Length: 339
Image (cartoon, rainbow, N blue to C red; front, side):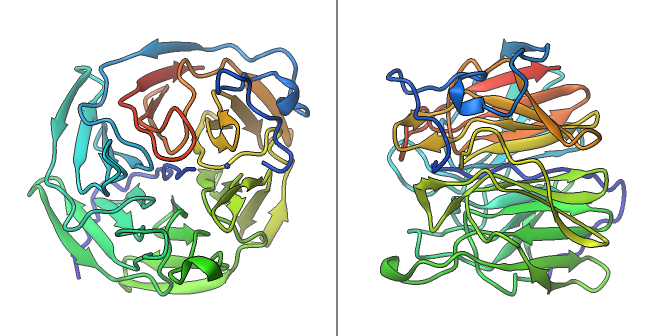
């Protein structure tokens, strides 16, 4: 088991995992759907302010990545590479220099995994090969040594899930279980990892079991957004649920049902980026205020994609990687949004 470093806990959302809508409006013929379109009914009609910048692209274009911020740098982990092979690659973006470097690769390739930072970088579960090959393994990266160790495994193997840090605990939520292609199952149990015990424990069930969802820490609550059923992007959901000390509650639904999204929290708002449906990918961005339990549209991403990751450094959100077309596609896109 890897030893957890207790210095400077970093609370951070997972990046999301991808690939998409029963209530989503179809994408336009160009393969994108703009924020504020009919698919965004329920959000404010006037986009909130904010600006996008295009930054240095990721050296190795990938999709279905996991992304997390650790010590002011953004780690992009695993995913699919252009030839469709699962990747063990870990590339690191430094917003201060707009430059990329490479970290030690994962011990094994993973796609549709999840990453969070809490004293080190945890990479949790994911698929090793096919969508039937979900793994329970958890890898812990220590930047000072540039090395990976094994941490305690999940109780339930899963891929296409979400993970988030709340206080001194890591939560693993949703995903697809290991099993044959003709009997796919969504993982209902939510697991919590306490570094003091070094163990994962089941804490109850996700009200709407699903995969390709996103999760964030919103005011100390686990907030789960979007996703789809049984890995099928024709069954996209607008589910939006929150876990607090009082249990689960249902929040205002995501205006544009989608899966393969990324999400982060910044300054009291939860931002949801991109996603996928059978007819195309989304450049849609929608922002949620817990204070008002309402959504608003945000200026759309320059590049529509799914299977992307998002991370916050300072007052800027960095949206990296992902596939520009449904299914297997990759990009090195690195776009920054400042609200």
